[in-house]
Image (cartoon, rainbow, N blue to C red; front, side, top):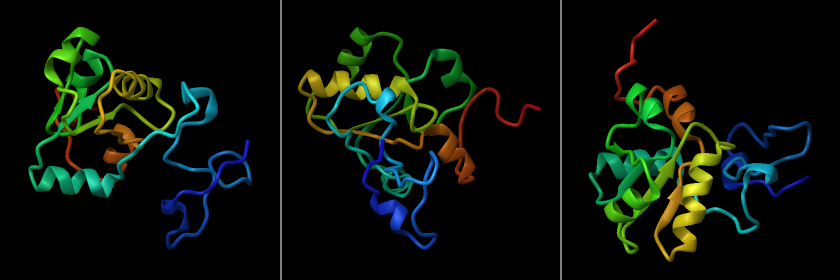
Length: 148
């Protein structure tokens, strides 16, 4: 399925693709992982890093399980174990960024969709996730950093 190219694909390296020769929007999960038809509002790695560097007031939520969070996560992230805990710690009017491992990871897509469905209005997804952050050489926190 061909999708329009995102702004990030028109950079200095030209158009890119994940599946064959068709250009795709690298900020959106493939259709089988999208859990809905509406586009997902996203935040780029550079935007997220800038928010963290400025100490902006927002909730950065890692949507993977507790073991993954304890192993490594983006500094400043929080983790919740249940939906009820999520709704207790995040107000509907707060600025929220959710992430998991990569663009097709269902955890952050599901969390994003649920928050939006419940009326949370300032939710975005860092689609590159933990792998993109780590590949860029940005700092991480966790128990398993530097472990061979």
